Image 1 (cartoon, rainbow, N blue to C red):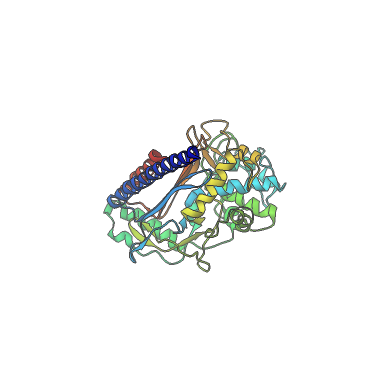
Image 2: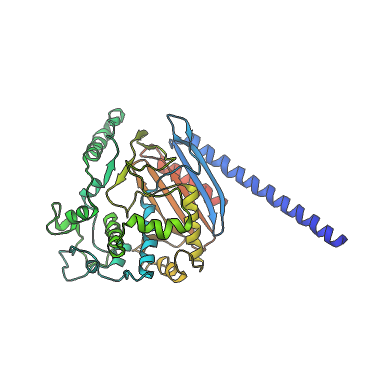
Length: 391
């Protein structure tokens, strides 16, 4: 009995020391990130450190609405830009598991229109090439027509330095004149020979599958194919097979008619801008918060460690394996290098990062509601490095 009491007493002491050390580390992270926030031009952000079982640390800093002094919290929702492509990668693997497609299928097997590289018309473009950014499909000057703002962007550029005023004005004028259109039309206008914006410059003069060229529109074509083969909208496919099983209840795609609750303001060149949506869904525009996205990254980390959940373990292995060449950089829309796996993103008013270590132990998420301000990337780098240091 005495030995048992002594053991329990020792266990309590050890747990107490561990709890104290854990709290001290949490306080240290918060202090360092608070210092970065106060010395930066970032309006607001939230972060998380996760392992494959739980959230280790998460917190918001600054404001989701500076004008109203509304704090940015772990429940604040914002778009995450190109990190949205990781969900597209998972959706492709789910569609393949369901027998709806094979990644090595030619894309024209699943499209009601034809897309081919004019320089290599007999070389099929495959879904896997879209997912690895080796399809030879390029983003053109027409890609920026994708942003549809809920209201006109005010002429804040008048207050910018002369060297950047004209360029920003041109961007704002373009965004303010963009018009919503069906996804199929947006794709066909650029990549079908009868499209109104079509030119051979929409493709690289390289054999499909041979050269890495990051392509947002390649992602959009992949998402459109999922909609075609599943006979349901891409957003609904994602909701049914990914968001609902993980209980990502505060995530999705906002629109002017269906805004998401607790959404952050976005700050571009230091100015608040209206909310916007995309014509397409595959390449960006997904909105979530730190709490929801942590659930998602934890599921993927479990899959990477050999556990089946929303996908089979074999699908995770295929999706997250090393690309065949370091020059290719991506595998099924995930960035994979020697140290980490994940994605980053950048859109007007948005900077985002979500990665986990190749060893599969911990991951980092950073969502920022500010872009194109002085030293923004340096500040985000410092946030990321602080979290990495404390992992």
